[in-house]
Amino acid sequence: MPTKIAVIQKPPVLLDRDATISSALESIDEAAGAGATLLVFPEAFIPGYPTWIWRLKPGGDMALCGEIHARLRDNAVDLSRDHLQPILDAAAKHGLTIVCGINELDSRYSGTTLFNAVVVIGPDGTILNRHRKLMPTNPERMVWGMGDASGLRVVDTPAGRLGVLLCWESYMPLARYALYAQNIDIYVAPTWDVGESWNASMSHIAKEAGCWVIATATALQGKDIPADFPDRDRLFDADEWINDGGAILVKPGGAIAAGPLVREKAILYAELDAQAAKDARRSLDVCGHYCRPDIFSFAVDRKPLSPVTFSGE
Image 1 (cartoon, rainbow, N blue to C red):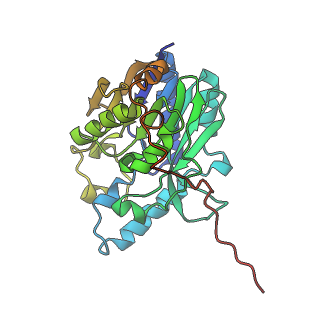
Image 2 (image 1 turned 120 degrees about the vertical axis):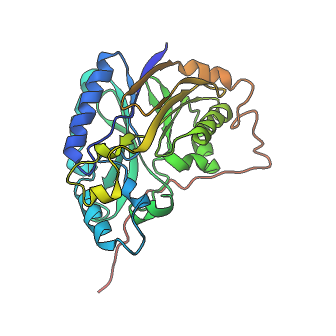
Image 3 (image 1 turned 45 degrees about the vertical axis):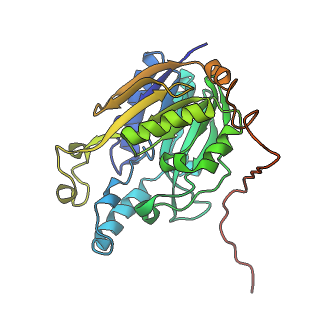
């Protein structure tokens, strides 16, 4: 049976966790009212992707970097402190599956290190999976630590078996294969990347994996940056498009089913059917009959990241 999806690329309230969650709840209500049951938000949506890192001068803006990072840390999501509870409650209220990118602060691990994470929330309001980005890209490493493979999992949802990789993790062939090997139907790629080459990669993945692919960045203009953002007017022009959004749905086999939604702070609606993914793998199953386990081997270390502990006198 087809599932109606909502790919939400509206901007967050940058560096404000509570206000961004309030905005997300409005989008959730809107999408639920339109009949969608699978909702996807962009990478690092709460409280926003750190777009400033691509504009600050390494070594030249250290004080400003520190000020902005402190605000990001203060507004990051700590799952152990129930920061996401309003969204969990909304998922349960409407019976939705929600995929949402977050800046995560794990107080049980460290009071400082942030992770680029994504959560999959089930229609009963529980977190089905949390995945942390394995390899932050370039200046992202000044913001986020490296994740582990404990969340490199595909989970059952009413829409089908669903897995998530963040942005350029989709350019990591072994990370992709780790999801393919779990009988994936829906591959979700919350991202900051956008454009023709990204869309081509999404089509390739849909063909390679024989699954549906959903991707979106945040549609964001300079005027969407809050007025109290440090040094806002120097870093951003009010009329510029910082990111075009580009929400897209790709069919198993690689054809674009909906989108890309470009420079619209809106929701892309479409339908998918998990059975189409299973049918697509009849002729090409890269983890099944199109695999050569006699000459290739593959393993994933799924031990969760844990803090270094000290023992001694």
